[in-house]
Every structure is written in structure tokens, then in C-alpha cells.
Image (cartoon, rainbow, N blue to C red):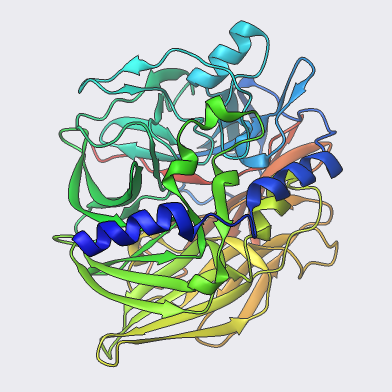
Length: 501
């Protein structure tokens, strides 16, 4: 323990003191050279319907909800980074030969303060407007505010939550999309000065939902926890001191393990203290530094008690999203993710969907407990991201995944891809001139094969947007409904089926 503290202190004062590969400087340069010029392109609308072209599956009767960064301007001020736009909830419902849609801005503490003051009030991912708004007192006495929750949505018990990368989530009404306010977990885990993944993982057999969090202080703590839907709390499984915190947007589970890939994009926790007070040139992600010499560390934890099972070291790379992981017949962990050579993708996404995107590739990691070695293999150079697999196969052996691809479509915008990991083949779905968001897989209730179901995905252009229903087996369109008006670029979402009565 003493040696760990000494190493931590050395880290604080020496390990990340260099300005080499400093994201903050790169962000300032990009903001100056490539400012946000376009105005916002979205509309808040109440429920309205459009006729379906094609035929909807009779069993598709739930609700598809996604969230998107949408509002970037207020008066003369503009938010620069895509990840910092105020969130817009959009909900699609299915009714015979019609599809209904409604959309509303999520009234976070940040947005409400901004609208009240007439200027942007936001300390975000890559933004710091240097303003201040009062913090709320949570049930356990912490001072906190809502996240600028614009990344994902989930259902916890009977509650529907919008998620960001910092606590706290924002509850909303799934039928009207009205914001119901900050959702206060009934626990004493960190509700401020922390980062948590916006991609919780639900075990398909036990139903337990897992997540990870970094608590920032003198040193950083990696906290592994699970949700309790009855008590509406986060229950800590384990906490581990880490000498540095890596920017980890996503993670994986298997039947027995939690797998975290820590890329060498790391932060000194002291650099995160007082960002708001430092200057408007400081930001959360700007405090991170790219340290490729440290390599990439893959940590495997036991799902039951959170104990560290084994660590593996790999060459440096970066990723936003995992595809999936599972334990193979040889007792190894096979993990697939969509990797980049470095974190430049964070800068590329600032003005997304405009601008060029750094190419990614599909990589698989094999973790061998017996040899204590890890291998990294590139299986395809197709550039893609926003991967999905069926919920029932999360952490289990799988063959296919679906993603948005960026360089394999005739119109050179993007399309949807189904990738076969067994045969190394892909199928592409695209429509001329449309920009697609993340697909969501909905399984057929009596489906037998892995890909027996449909994909729901939104494609948009300057004239309007359409919701497509695609056969996940053949990648052929089954139906679509089109809507006039502007729409934000779809990020993550979820299909919520009707609960049994």
C-alpha cells in the first residue's frame, strides 16, 4: 500500500507533468481553426404520425427512444463539441400502418440555467463557459447537479433515465418525453467529482446491470457497481485505487467477468480539480494526455466480488466502443472492439457529422489466463463505429454485429453494416444522401437464429428524416416512415418492449 501511495505521488508530480500530446492545446487550436458555424438543426414537436411504406412486423409494438446532442447555440454563443450539445429526446411508436414520433429537449440543470440567464451555462466534455449554478443537496447530503445527459437512455425499474458521463442522470416521462428532474440514486456512491460510463451492461441471464465509475480525488478510484432496481440504488461491488485514470467510454462483460480496456489517454486527477475556476480554456477531456509509451492495459475483474483476476498489456491504441466479449471453449476471453490508432477521433467528432473522421478498424483481443498473455488482431479495416449486438448475446458467444460504417458506401456519407466475424464478410445497407445514426436490434419474439429480428435506425438529410425497419438477417428494408423537418444526429437509444401485465 505504501509503495502504491509513493508511486501515486510520483505520478501526480512527475508522471503527467509534460505537455506532450496535451489535448487541451489541440482543442484550442481546433476551436480556432474549425469553429462551429452551422446553426442548430432540430425541432421540438408533439406526437404526430406518418404513413408506413412497406409492412411493419406485427410484434413491433414497443417504443424506440433515442437521445441526440442537438442545441449548440444560444444568442451569440456557440457550443463547439458535438458531445456537449444539449440533448434532444426522440420517441417512435408503432401503430398498424403508421409510425408516430415526438421530440423534446431534455431540461437539464445546465439547459435551464442557460435559458434563464440567456447565455450558455455549461461545464461539459470539451467546454467550459465559466458560469456557475447552484448545486442540489442529494438524499445522502452530497452537492450535485444533473449531467448534461445527451448520450444514452435506460430503464431502471419503472423509471426512464437519460445518461451522460457524469452523475446525475435525468428522469423523463417515456410517453410525453417531459423532463421530470434529477434522478437521485438511493446510495452514497459519488454523485459529483466522478465519471461513469453511459453504457451500462445487463447480463442476459441474471438481469443484473453493471457499470463502472472513476471517482477523482488525491488519487483516482475505479468503482465497479451494479444497479438494484428495487431500491433504485447503485451497489458497490469493489473499489480499486488506480495511479491514473484512463478515458474509458465503454467496457465489456462476460458470463463471469468484467473487462476494462484502459487506453493511454490518461489524466492527473489534480488537473481536474477546479477546472471551472481555472479558465474557460480548460475542460474535462482537455485535462487528459496521450501517453502511448504506457501502452494499453486490459484488466479482468470478477463479476461477483470485483476482485482483480488478471491484467494484460497491449500496444497503445484507442477506442470508444466495445462490440462484445465472451469466454470461449479454451477458457480465454475473446473481445471485439472498434479501434483507432490514437485519440484524434475525439477532435474529429467535434463538428460531427461534418468534417473527416479518423479511420477505425475491427480488432479482436484474446486474453489467455494460462499463458498470462494477450494478443491483438485486426480482422478488418472497415471504418465503423456505434456497434450493437442482440441484448440476449451480451457477454456471450456471438457471430454478427451491426454498426455505422463510414467508408464503404457509394455516396461517401455512411451506411449500416452487418459484419460476420466467422466469415469475415459484411453486408451494407444505405440510402443515397442519408446520414444514419446508431442501429438498434429488436429480436423477433419467437426467433431462433442470432440475427432473427429487425434493426431500427434513423436516416436524415437537410429536408427531413426517416425511421427505417430493416430485416437484420438479410439487411433488406421492410418498412420506413418519413417525416418533414430538421432532426438531430441520432446517438444511442433503446427499444423498450411492453412489459408483461
